[in-house]
Each structure stands twice: as C-alpha cells, then as structure tokens.
Length: 108
Length: 112
Image 1 (spheres, helix red, strand yellow):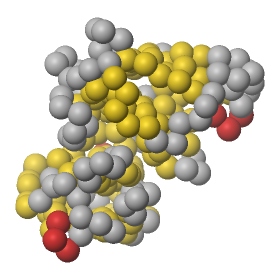
Image 2 (cartoon, rainbow over the protein chains, first blue to last red):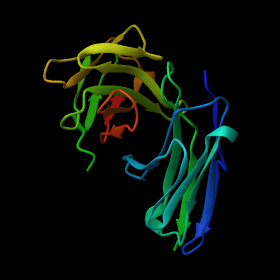
Image 3 (spheres, rainbow over the protein chains, first blue to last red):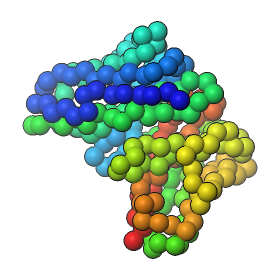
Image 4 (cartoon, chains in turn red, blue):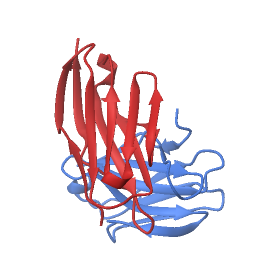
C-alpha cells in the first residue's frame, strides 16, 4: 500500500512566524486532504487538495501529484494553530491512509 | 462543526466488556468510515460503509464489528475488550464514498 511520510515530526515556533509542513507519498494518488487535530482531539478538515494550490486565510496548500508531495504553509502563526497536522491520501482501490503527523507548538 | 455526530464522547469500561459506538453522518452523506487513533499506532482505518453496504475493510479486529443502518447512521461494536483497545475512535462521512472526508469529534474509550 501507499506509504505516507510527513516532515518535520515536531516543530516549535514563536507566535508570528511562518512554517512549511511537507507530506510525501510513495505512489500516485487521486485524493489528498490536510487535517488539523487540535489539543482537544478534534480533527478539522483544512484542505481537500488532490492537485494545485488553495488558500484559506493564513493557511495555504500545494500538491504536486506528479512529484508525489504536498506542502502546507502556515503564515503569521498563532497559538491556536498548535496541534498535530496530518495529511491523508487515497488512490483508487486503496484505503484512505494517514501520515504520522507533524506536531506544531506555537509559543506566545 | 463538521456535521458528523458521535456518541458517547467518553466511555469507560472494564476488560472483557462490550460497547457500542454510534455515528450519525452529515446530512446527505452516504458513506461512513471508522478510524482508531491510539498513542502508538496513529490513525488506523477500520472499515467503510457506503449506503448500507461494506465497501472497504482495514485493520479491524475480529472482536470488532460495524454496520450502517437504512437511515445511514452507523454503529461500531467492540467486544471482549482489552486494555489495548483504549483509544480515540473517529467516525467520518463523505457524500460519494470518496474524499473529502468530514470527521466527528470522536469517542474516547478507556478500558480499565
């Protein structure tokens, strides 16, 4: 099955800093989502982005499916951005597979 | 609010017992997915239903079973519970059986 890697595993930022999270996958995919799991455990859908670029406020994401990676950009980070960021990918005939996540801590 | 409702939010039970977790998908969504998140295993796909039929199966133990009812809500039954079954269990739904998925807030199961 598809292997999903995320980097970095852990990230500590000062409030106001920018960051880039990366998701690499081992095979071609037709679907990709980014999620944020907040400190209360809720999984929040950030982007559905099988290809191209999308932006939502301070967050944006880019997926280059042909090169098997996706990037999540967080600008002007806030303490409420803390939590774990997961990417999840799906190829037809396979299950929706989650990466191990990037744990982000934003310090005030 | 994703529109996916899971009950109960918390569940504490003893080893050997049986529990049922319930999920109501977003209005109009036909597909339901179950995931298990434990500390050392990450988010593991258990099973997916589409319009009442099982569509895909992941790493679901034989002690676990699930079903999707005609009104599209789903239940995950966990039996002969072990300490290692303690985890956060998520339900997600999608309209078509393909992403995007929308997750509920999870049920936190503690087996003592």
